[in-house]
Image (cartoon, rainbow, N blue to C red):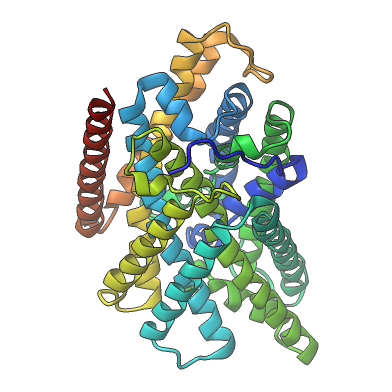
Length: 462
């Protein structure tokens, strides 16, 4: 394992904005949010004020004040020590290894709609496995090359969202709104929409991800806060407009979590030959964005896991890096293996691509949310124990405001975890809970094993 790898400074402000947009702006979240109905628009706006803005501000302060390779791992380590940092990083990494298959099942579902209507679920799983290993390859090439995957993915997402918005404006002139936007429909219905609120919160996370590659940024102190501000405005604007557009076309009850995007595009543009070609082109672009989603998150999470392994807190294999490129080969290959096994196991248990997508999404989401609680507490603790540290950007208002935004964000995340585990009207999601518990136990065993090897190596060196 090489611990002296020099990382190339390749990420500028534009790259960081596009990277963050690629990570957070998710087309699958759009369909899940629209399933709530018209009240989803209110939820987007309300939760943006309560959660997205405070969370983004915290990420901006931490990213420019502590620009360390590994991002969330380094922040939790500095505040609470290596073991808690390793636990956070394990959850962060293994979530992506499970979530990437969900995204690639979404890819396969759209591919089936576009090109092969008879494609079986087994065939869709095969596509997901193939994409997983292409993503591994992209992760082990240098960021100055690999960054173009999330960059292009972000641009195409913006194009697709804008196309959906324009299509909706044209569509409703002739057909009216499938879901009327009135004061009554915009008012949140707690009994119905709670099931999908976690998907909206999930669609607001990821502002910290780019900081996992801090050593590869040209000027993190200047660019991190700016990129978070710009990307945050782009993301929430497109989410609100995109959700409104989907609701203009499809009754909320008929929205399919996997195939809703193409249903919307075909409805808006499919009446003429030219419109059908446009819908097909946008569908192909959507396929690329699903691929870029997986690549973007893998890039950030694999770098965090590699940093933890280099410091001896995860098994050494996670820390294997290219001597010439500084890329996380070990973590990327391990992610490919876990993703393949997850697709195979869950795939043959699911009855449809929508069941498979939601099972993987809910399970990975709970694992994903846990490290953020640690990151938020780390922010608060570093404000206390390292109060004199230079912060190029600092949330105004002193410790009182810092505590308020931290505890509000933690409360929202805690409720989101509960809603992923317990669905109102359906009860406890036992398979999801079992998967979470098993994953945490495996993580604890992995971390303890790494610690034992580290102590043995230190004793042998004496």
